[in-house]
Image (cartoon, rainbow, N blue to C red; front, top):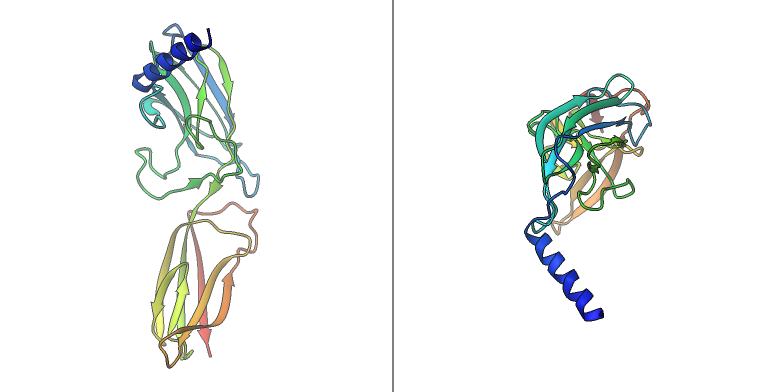
Length: 231
């Protein structure tokens, strides 16, 4: 009996490696609603694109919900609601568009860390819904922003400036550095100056940080700051 059960389970798993169809009746009205809020500040996120995607199970790896054309954006309170009718055999999921454009191009705007709930099959950012019912799905992404920093060095004596893992060289420097899709931590964006000793080794000298003074305020698409260093 145990062998027979194992055999049946194996056959089922092998079948799902090819494709497991949804046996729910087609053309059912499904409603999905919820709220999108910032994981960092708790404030509602307006204008976030939410899409309905269809997928099949068991296609060797994590399935990717393909957009169906049904979509909605969150309102000023971060709320969204949309409805669709399912096709035979397909599964469906609600997905938060992480990029600034509907075709998933442009700057990455939202991300999910390991502490946030994730769909067991689809991962973070997408959640499978049950067709023929009203589904409430809330999301709490972290916001990513582009930080534009004008850096002005005036005879500092430092040979290198490290900004977000990129190195700028020059003792007299006047440039604009873009830190794209940067998550702004409470500790701020860190800048570290380096000198080079006689052996050619980098030696750390000064550490500074650009800190957002009011993290609860709605963030614009681009945060700007000017740093002037004089020694």
